[in-house]
Amino acid sequence: MEKQYDRKLFFIFGIMFTLLSLLFNWATISTGVFPAGHDIMLIAMTVMSFSNAYLAPQFVKNDERTKKIKERGMFFSYFINLGYLIILMTLLQFKILDVTAYQVVCMIAALTIMTVFVSFVVLSKRY
Image (tube, rainbow, N blue to C red):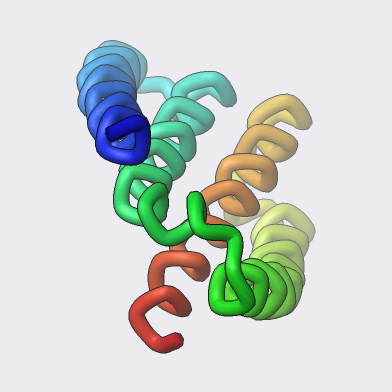
């Protein structure tokens, strides 16, 4: 019974974060400004909540399959994050992207969070 409750709770949080991120990002973009860091983090929290809602029944078991999904997910996320960093450094070096340091750190954090949890979901379907 508790497993189902956790899944519903993550889904409710996902809906709340979706609504908040839509509101904040729409307000920021409508003023003609690149979204601030906290706006991008809300999108990452949305992805994390929906991913946890999907993964909650599987991760509660904490068996060998779950451990393999977590290990492989972190392994793949490491290399994907390196790719993000290379692309981001290139965009910043050639001044294609003009953002503040706070926005860059928030973008990296949000991309890391999203990459880890999306890789968990993809690998849970594979294993």
